Image (tube, rainbow, N blue to C red; front, top):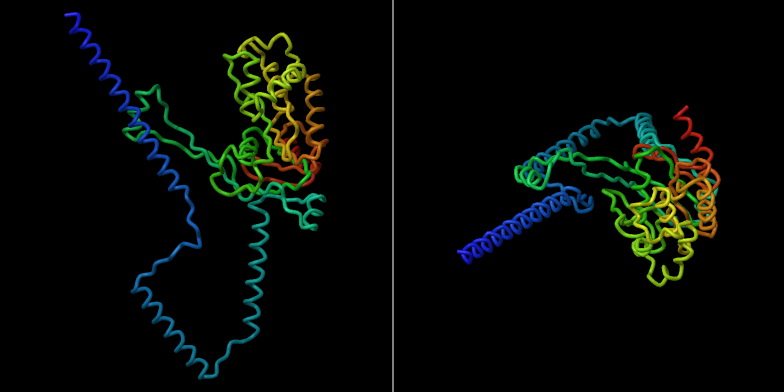
Length: 372
């Protein structure tokens, strides 16, 4: 009897495992199909490869119309009727004015105001190519509008095709250029797409449409808290976070004491990070992120809003050393003082749309006026 019960339990367990495997395969198959459909919908056709098919009947009608028009034109010429040159000139003038208006509307970019800085004008005159070129970048995210209470509920809604999503437009047709040696600040209210833009420039995200021209091998993205595991100690997180940034183990071994001293966390490195305050985590993340030498293109994502007032001054001094070491810098900050004192050009993005690009004083002044 005991043997039969064991066999029954084994068979039951094997059946449960088999059902779980089938569910996993079903979920992965549905997910792959959805992804492939999404890619097909997002794929933009090349205008050079588009062929417009015309029905044979329509082609014959068009040919007959062309023949009729040519006959009528010959009859008119035979009768000696000529088109007045004055009317032709007026029509050409109207077309020219319309083209000028369209060009002006295109330059404005749907109400966006673009101002070129003096350094940018000089670099364009010298024929220097931009280090970072952002062209018509649009980023859409799919946000779920369905609520699921668990795996069972999710599977039921997936099979019944009841899962619904909506498009979130994070960036809408954003374009600007960054030249070598420039320090460019990106400003805007929370949720305007600033960090999303930095991730696209660094290569962490692919835009829905548009393109970014930049040498990603020369980029160093400094962002805080990426890759921290709260269940690990601070010492272990130094190596984990450093590996994510791109540091080798030899590099971390060499600079470990410098990281600990700058973060002012000596005596706490064997504690789990979950027991740290948010300020301690920020200080540790900043120390790890800035331990290496500055890259040719430096991208800073809110790395100056860390710790208390004294640590903020120390972190600002280190960032200034990296900025003024010859790197091209693209930075996000909500501190207008930091932007004004360090940036040669500012990009203002509001709710995903480009509002203004130009000198720091002019752009920051316009940004502040919206709150007056």
